[in-house]
Length: 400
Image (cartoon, rainbow, N blue to C red; front, side, top):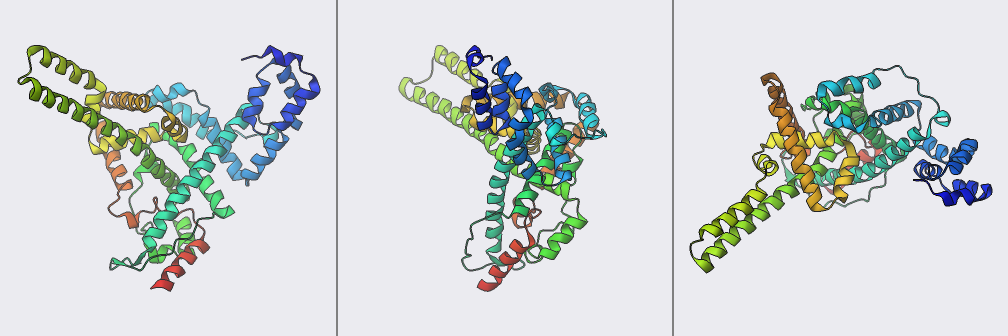
């Protein structure tokens, strides 16, 4: 949207406004407000973007992280219609970016669109890091309250220590989120990262051994850290999406209970319902039992997990939008997209359906809460510093 009033502002004032803006997102918005603003931006681009460049250079500490962040942004900028295409149509678009030998230019030579996407990625990474680290630390400390996991003995009250992440931990969490952003697009056609969720001997989460820094370091050498980091972030977002899906189920159950209560009340006041009463009640039930609602009510557990995984493939940005939606709009979105997924699955062959079922069972393994103390994804064990885990270990020893 253009603002003709900006054309009347003196050059000095326009440049001063640009200097007060540090985010590329705001710079892009202001530069797009009028031709004269964009002209001044183009003429003084390097000077205007210098504060933003410093922030990004501080965040992207290594060439590898810069490369991965650029790759994630290129994937995020794929047209949104990709979300509604057939997997066979999605795969070549994603692979063409993942397998390209494209050399990314330095930050100073990147266009404003990429810089804006980098800032969005950084903001998301910061938000996910704080939320996931806080939850994982709480889980880790609660598991540490058990004095000896082998015998299941509950130890004395465990002192809680506030979480203050080190720079290396923040860097590791943010790297994990970037890996998630790169690989989530592959979930539309390739689920190998999530199928590799079996808890092998090397991956076994044992409190006494995994708290030792040396074992953690060995864990990074033995396992593909990028895959485990992706699974960890995926597991965290999956729980967030699952809360929204469960709210839809609760709303449907409440509406059904209200309908049953109104029918019982009608019988108590009027006796047997008349033909007109039955017609009205049937219409109310039909309004609620749409095709979307019926498909949702008939879902199996592994089917629900596949749907939540489908939501996770859209990343944190969709979760953020859904959380800010009005409840009814959010519920309609979930019911509609679930129905769309069911229709797509019904159109596949026997082999594809069997693969989907295997994927659902792998998700059940990933979401297993019965063996919670053996869950490395929930505890974030691939991101902590060894010294933090050492300290936690000795705090446990001190109270035994």
